[in-house]
Each structure stands twice: as C-alpha cells, then as structure tokens.
Image (cartoon, rainbow over all chains, first blue to last red; front, top):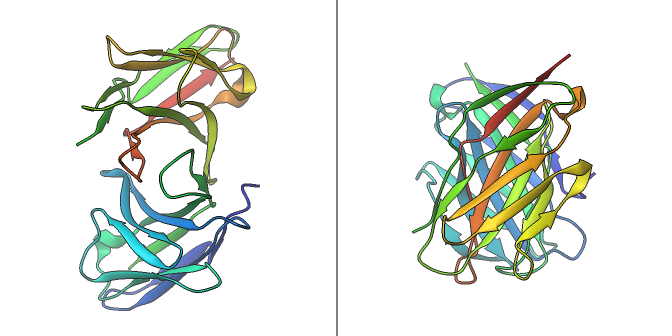
Length: 113
Length: 113
C-alpha cells in the first residue's frame, strides 16, 4: 500500500460525458501528479500540483483540467469524453517539489463507450 | 528534454534463469533514475532508484541495476527469477531541474516454469 488513494477504481461512461477522478496523496506529501496510461502511448505525464499550485504541465488535453485543494487532495476532470480517452489514470505523490521517487496509487480505469 | 528507451517490449524467460531488462536514457544534465514494477491490475511500485553515489543499486525482490553514465544506461538485473516476477517493468528518468518523471514504454517480463 503506497498510501495514495484513488477513487473510483473503475468508471464506465459514454462519449460526450464528463467525469471526475479523485486522489488523496500520502500524508504530508505536497506534490501531486497525474499520469495517463494507455496501450499505445504508455505512461504520459499530464499535470503536477505543488501545495495547491499548478507547477508543471505535460500532454494534457484542453478538455482535461485538474486542481489541488487546501487539504492537498486533487481532482482530475475529464470532459467531452471520447473513445480514445479510455485509459488508466494514475495519481502519484511525493513530499517535495522535484526530488525523490513518486508514490503511485492503484489507478482509476476509465472506459468510454 | 529527457527520454527513456526500453529496448525490449517483452522478455520471456524460464524460472530460475537470470534476466536483464535494458534501459537507455537521454538527458543533457545529471540524472536520477528509477525502476518501477507494475503487477496486473495494480499501480506502480518502486523497485530501486539511483540518485547519486554508488553506481550499483540494489532494490527489492533481489533486483539490482547499474548506472553507466558513459553508455547512458540503467539496466535492471536479477540472477534468478521466479514466476511471481511476471509483471511489467518501467524505467524512468528525472533530473534536478525537472519536477517530473519521464517513463519508458515498459518491458513485460514473462516467467514460465
């Protein structure tokens, strides 16, 4: 158990819909990362928050957004969903800004039908 | 920019045989290197990491890796694998100036009796 909690574990929805994925980082970790894992693209970095502020952005679509709340949990919002958005979405956390390893949650599997 | 190349998408091996999973990275600055393992339907778990110091790094479950700066490699080895080592293995790179981890596409290790 990494200490990172993600909900929901599985989500099935239809094209055009909007979903929210939730992440609780390890106790005391200030940095939260979101990654997307798909068969064709592998693990792609989406976005990083540090203590409530966006700090780095990767290959995140404009239809996707995220935020980190004062209690440090984070949410990833995916809207106008397309079939290609079906993937495993991972949240990870680390204590600091840019040192050390990431601790990953078990992921949220999104299926868009 | 940083990148990671995992040269083998799949490595089949018999139980109790040695294995090496290859990883090469590209970075213009000093690096931090990581190996993660992903068991089916689970998140990523850290196997080992190189931040500085000794180039031979020992990790969990009997795995080790060697950082070779001249060859820009960080190959993962285990002298004798078990069926339970069947999983996907990801190499990742980061640097002091980067806050994110860049992952390779993964190598599926298939251990058969």
